[in-house]
Image: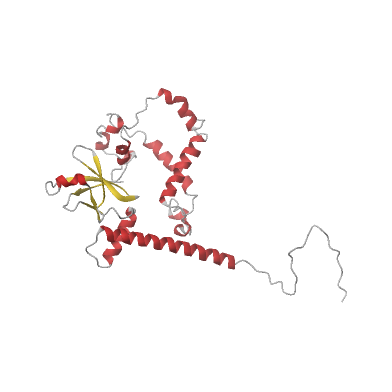
Length: 281
């Protein structure tokens, strides 16, 4: 995210220490004193994620010969749900090393004593975590990563203002973006062609590069989205075929006993002893 503030002491500047009051902090100046707690939580979660199929581990030494792409099994949405389930279902209900109690139990014991400052505008709170870029409003709308967006709210400003717009976007869903008015409020804008399906930022960038590599200078939103969807379907099909081929190879590699002329062990009850007859021939 382009607005990330480093939490290590060495990475902070004097400007970080004088950050202005945030509307989400109740008007109080932001003090990044909880950075250590966040880093510890991230470390705890990453340790658990490294046991999932497809992990890239922390470094090349730990990765070794492990093929992360081959073993990858979760989509980004599934990974997000896995992490959420681990936090609310496992972490909150397990004994905390420092507290000596499950975090959820400590929270319930003290929640009545703490004045909670919940965000009044949940959408705006969510938007603060999204990456952002500045764009100039064109006659055809807002262009971002080769995709074109439009909102009726932009009509009055087309051709009348050359100010830069702050644009927020969700890399997981590029079907809509959010631009900020001078008043500070955010308004959403959708694909100029609302019939197009949602794609991720990675898919959009990959598709755009693919089209440009083919010499298509005039790349439009429809071409990018269609290419991204075609590539997505190709990957899904290839993944299924590869998985099926691996299963078939594994099945064929199992040892097969050729029992022609040697009888069969099937149906033998080993619990009943069979008398031994010596072969005197």
